Amino acid sequence: MARLRQSWTHPRQRPIIVNDMASYPESGGPIRRAIPEGDNLERLVCDACGYIQYDNPKIVVGAVAAWEGRILLCRRAIEPRSGFWTIPAGYLELNESSEQGALREAFEEAGAALRLDGLLAVYHIRRLSQVQLIYRAELLSEEISAGEESEEVGLFTAEDIPWRDLAFPSVRWALTQYATVKDKAAFAPYTNPDGETGDYKPGSTTGV
Image (cartoon, rainbow, N blue to C red; front, side, top):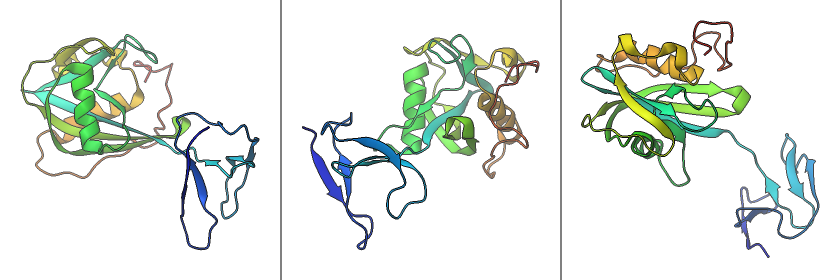
């Protein structure tokens, strides 16, 4: 039987039952989509125990990191977009700050140690319900090595970036926006370029 705990969100609201187990249901109760009391959106609810499942956007963290003017890129070894190039980035873990997540992803994917130097951009990919937090960073050394999720890693000059083989639209955005602020002491974070949603563009020269 799953262990259940109660948490209160408001003194006048009934308690929300939070499941401590990774999988649900354990109680065998019925699950249906409904609008819970005090809410305005459909959620997955259990009539037997009162459990409410909230599906919220995922947070992705990453960094555009440079060493002596060259940008760190990783060729993906996993789907989606295996074989295409990206900046080191991935999902934020529980109980982790966005800065910690960006540093961890760089080490896991490229064996890279970074110093973060400001929030470069906040991107919204609505089709995936993703929010991406991308930092500007410096490599602490040029020692890099491919992690389990990378086929290979490399340091690229601006002229050598494989624009036709970038994995995702937001990678293109981040690299382009980084170029405009790489030498600035202070800058405001970017967001999606005008008209850009993160959808792929098959007819473009890059596909992203």
